[in-house]
Image (cartoon, rainbow, N blue to C red):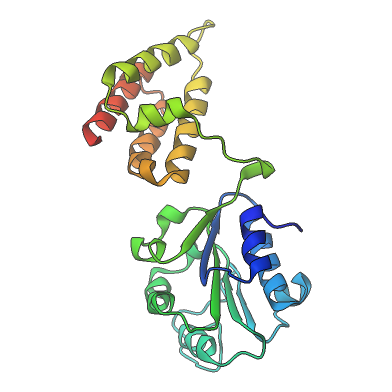
Length: 246
């Protein structure tokens, strides 16, 4: 499979980040395997089957054993740390984690030091469905790559950025007025346009560093509207909270 342009440039130039976190679409695991195969000059099938001596694949199927401290087994915490520090035959040792956010908390803590100071010739490729479930200490040490959904580039909308990060409350209330009118076209209130608009706002908050502080408020508003809370009240409360955080 083809790699996203940014990752393709890294792999082709041999400058892949040592701690890479992939998120954003349903192909993150396949892309992680392809990256490893390209770096190790082998096939995805060899990587996935665990047949490449310098590539460790930790799938989300419960095989990562938290309490077992056998250093001889790389799928235990101590074993993985020992394995990562061994000299590779290939140019790199690569550790791939599937759904890293679902690794037990104790395992994340145990691997934190390894991520803080990775061995010189070791690369971590992590995948996650939700990077915000990871510790801030993890996120601050990885290179986060958000993969576009459906092979489309993420479109940044200036009006949404202004709503989320602007200080003009009047502008926010005018937007809410327009959204509220969209819900009243039929006999029943249609919440779909509001949910879709909030989903777009949430996508911006997840993708743009300067908007991440708005994510929790947006998720709360979306849950409230899905729970049949009054739309205008919920959005105006959201606008007030956003403005107070500006």
